[in-house]
Image (cartoon, rainbow, N blue to C red):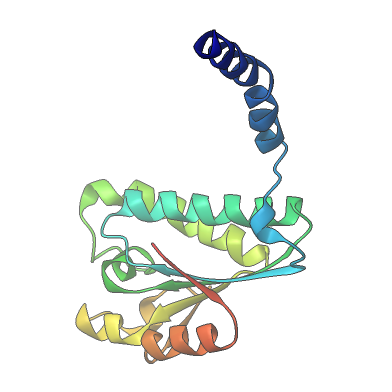
Length: 164
C-alpha cells in the first residue's frame, strides 16, 4: 500500500508541478542574474571556419538582446584571434572561394554588433602569425598589439571571459 501511495504522489507531482517549472523557464527568468544591472563580457573568438565564426556572431547578438530583455546593460567586447583573423579582413586573399559568401555575412553581422555599441578587437599577434597587414582588417575592428594582455586587462576590470 505504501508503494502504491508513493507511486501516486510521484505521478501527481510529475503531472502538475513539473509543467509549472518548465513554464517558468519559458518566461526568461534567470536566477543567476540576481541584482545585476550590467553584464560585462569578453568574447574570445578563435573559430577555424567562416561558418563557425558567423554562428558565434549570431549567438553574441542573441545574448546581447536577451541581456537587454532581462533589463541589463550589456557591455560586450569581441576579440578575434587565431584563425578567426582570416575572416575579418577587407581583402579576400586569405580565404578559399567557398568562404567568400559567408565572409560577406560576417562583415554585415560585425557592422550590426558595432551599431549596438559592441567593441571589436583584433589580435596583433595573430595578424603577424598569418601575415595580415594591420590595415587589412575591417575598419570596425581595433587592432591591439597583444590580445592576451587585452583579455587579462578586461578580466581584471570585471569582464567575464567567454571562449568561442
